[in-house]
Length: 95
Image 1 (cartoon, rainbow, N blue to C red):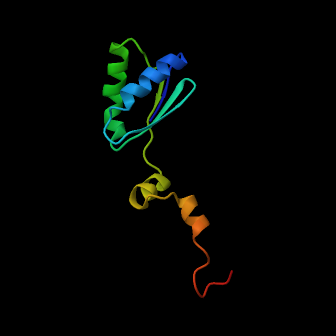
Image 2: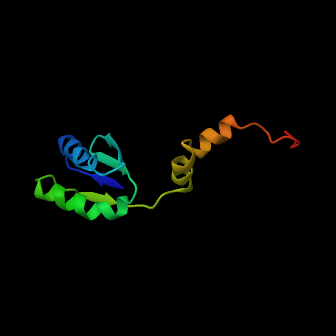
């Protein structure tokens, strides 16, 4: 999920709340907070409500499902791009 805030300070506060979500990976960029978490879609409404109650309103929220790369990373610990870079041609395959 991606959350947008009015100020960088609000984004930092939002990140601290989001970091409480089990398994969350939180990234802050200026006034934006990106949260990758298992069941993040289910956690979004509660997170927004907690932030509003704390006086840190979210100005924009976007919730998206996992990409194929997210699933691959979760299963293997590597992204698809890393896999392509470290894997050479398949034996018997023309280069």
